[in-house]
Structure formats: structure tokens, C-alpha cells
Length: 321
View 1 (cartoon, helix red, strand yellow):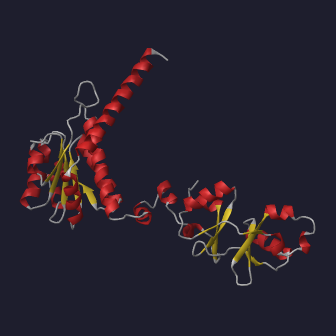
View 2 (cartoon, one colour):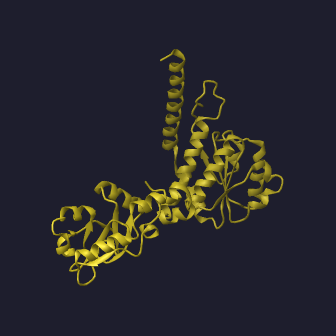
View 3 (cartoon, helix red, strand yellow):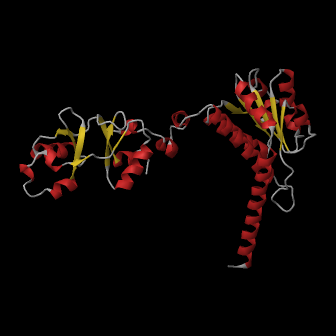
């Protein structure tokens, strides 16, 4: 390892440790003002308008996105654009969440004045208790006096990390209070890997599951297995409830005199099943753990009333692995 590499690692570890220490200070500093901010947002009939300039603006965009995706309607408004017409986006019923480490960012003046003029609740986040932003705010969230991670102390690093974490804390507190569910989360995340992971078994399963009566001859079972192409057939009792399954492995174990046997003779009893409302990711985990390729879907979960079949290939095509 060269000396320059060592220096790089030393710097990286110093930065991360400083920011971690600052986050600990932030957690310890939270008080009733944080609870008041959450309650203010919960009372709002409109949206949370998040604003900030420069690096605080980038953090504000992320906070607005996190709030919106977890059940709290939110929108980022750029403070400079607000001064040129976008103040019309900030309306009575909204709550403004304004970020500024110094609390004196000049571009924020108009949006702060707008909230005061129209009685729009204002939550301010800043690092100076006597700053204009916090003095004007209905709820003031003061960041701890933690040094920036750079040696010059001028680059927004620790301060923006604390602000981002505070925004996450607000979003999660609101989310948990509202009992925000994975289903609701999926509504806002229909695309990509996250949307796939939140798919339900019912979204991916085949409703026409291959089934055969337990007293049916194996010749019939083989025809159904070949026709459906899943490599498995479910065996039902006289009432039509799932009693067992026949897989390729069961066929190999009963090769001698196979066609003289019934489905009930060959099946593996009490197969692993899953409910239609279970997450597809859970189904994949079960199949991987059991080293199997499909699960019969029963409704309700725990019963033996078959409603479908889920194959591992269906999950892979949906992006769940």
C-alpha cells in the first residue's frame, strides 16, 4: 500500500467518523420541537413544501421525495424560482419545511415572508439558534454545532448529512404514525427492483394450477404434467383440497411399475404452500431454502384450497431473485 493510498483512507475514515459523531449529536439533541414538527405536518390539509438553496436545496429535493413516497404529500420549491412566480405553489393548508445551515440564506427571504403573510406554518432547520430563519419559524429545528468533515471547515458535509438524516427521521416518524404499509409503498414504487420485490404472489401466480385426483392413474398424471409444463402436478382429495404433489423426483423414485400406480401412491404428502397475499420475495426465499422450483398457492394461507401455482421462473422474469 502506497503512502498516498494510506492518506486517502485516513481522510475517508476521518470524514465518516466526524459525520457519524455529528449524527449521534443530532439524535441526542432532538426534543419537543421535533415532535411539534411531526404534529404540524400531520395537521396539514395540503402538502409539505420543502425548500433550500445550494447544497441544502439538493437535500431538500431528497427529503421531499422521501416524504412523498412514504405517504406524506410533498413538493420541492426552489427558493429563487419562488421569487419569480413559484410562490403560487405554496398555499394555505400547506406546511413549509425550509433548510439553511446558516439560517441567513438571502434567496430564502421571499418564501419565508410568503409563509408569514399567508399564515402558512413554517418549520425551519438551521445550525444557528438566532438566525433569521429560526426566529421566523413556528417550529425551529436546531442542528448541533458539529464541525464540517473537511479540515477547512467550510465545505457543507457534516451539516448536510445531519439535515438529510433529520429529514429521514421526520419521514419515518410520519410513516410509522400513519401505519404506512408495504402495499401503499408499492403504489408509489411500481417500477424497477423495488416494485418487483413488493409484488404479491397473486400478481405472478398461474390461476390454472395442474391438479389431479389422488385416485387417478399415473398415466393421467403424466399427461397433465407434460401439458402444463411446470414439472409438477398437485394431488387433491375427494373434496378437492391439496393432499400432495408429484414432481420429477417422485417419478424417478417410483419408476418400477409407475403406470400401475395411482397419483396418491406416488405423491409427496403435505407439500409446502403459500398464500396469495404473501410477498413474492417470501416465496422466492422459501423455494431457495427448500431447493424447489414452484409453490402451490392456497387461500387462505394455511388451508388446502388451491387457487394457483407460482413458479420460480415467474419470479425471475419479474426481477425478483
